[in-house]
Length: 544
Ligand code: MAN
Image (cartoon, rainbow, N blue to C red; front, side, top):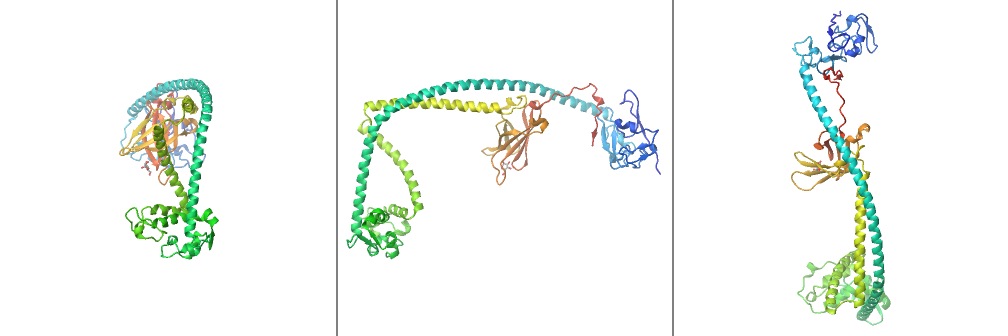
């Protein structure tokens, strides 16, 4: 049943010094298991067969080890020696399948594929390519040595600069303390001299406030007398209902509810309550009411266009443009939220007022002469000069502190085990594809810029080394970039391979807003292994 097709291959060219015969397709290192004088033990121990069953085109062993030279076992492997090039392990199914897989043509010994042995040519080309790559790697490795040297030098220089800056900062701090003392000494007499001005100013202000208060009180008294129709010292619902100005919903008459609103929900309001709180509510509408009986100062405006509720009913002929202003006052009294808004806008207005005041002050000063007497002015000038000098000294200290901080931070960064990446700091590398130009500034940031259009997108800030444990310096992560619409923040993964130049050779976006940068750099070039001079005998095998 089993035809014995034990085909023997002479591998003398490869094996020194003793010549070994192996069945077809057997890996040289396993040749000793195939001894024609003994039964064959399947390599996985699944059985023992007569040696004549080896390569008989029938699969006996579970691991396919009895059929290294045929396609009989689905899980077997065929070994091509490929003399002159690299040996290869191919799946047994490729034996005699009409396709040349082994460059020495050994896998197609019984097919019509007419394969020819091209191992020597291919081997030569591969060796040339390998030599070229080795050369590049070596060149990169030497460049890496210079990067290391430069990195160490820079680290030392930065350290020297840090020490220098620390001293400079100490001096600057001492100067600042001096200037601060001078400033304090100058401000003391200035403060005393200005106090008398401030006191006069405050007194003037107090008088003005007092006058204003009196004016308000007088106004309130007059208003009360006016509203208190029967002069009994109380305001009543009836009395307010007789004043159209309290018709807040403009339905033509003042309802009891509207009147009570101004009486703080009561039926009656005493004079004291009116002065304490009632007047504050009534004043805006009352003043409006007053104006309605004053001849207009400008063309009347139709009510519907200019007013929003709750305005008073008014005499169209007497309606003036100031009404809106009063209406706002009215609303601010009714609605606490509006009040805060009004405060805001008042604040805003105040700043303008301040500005105007300052201008006015300047003008006034020009008109009235200098603000202070000679002696005070001198003290103010001396204090101003001292303040300026202190500010300058303080600025200097802060500038030095900033510079120092940035250098110290840079000193703490991980520029690789031998400082080999340090020289890349401060440089940027670009790559342009169809849509974008990408820029990588090592230890700083990664950027994306559309070719057409403006603006840059931050893809990430320098984060950390993320390579595998054995060589973590082969990968960098730039994280916390601009947020992706409806997605995560952008990030860039930078994978570094050996090259004679630090260069971006590709950028892609494998996942939305996650970018992959391919960077070559001598910084990752390791020393190539020494070759033994006979590259044709490279017998490492590759399993397909
Ligand atoms: C921009 C670019 C793209 C990114 C989209 C996500 O167009 O940053 O790379 O995929 O935003 O919306």
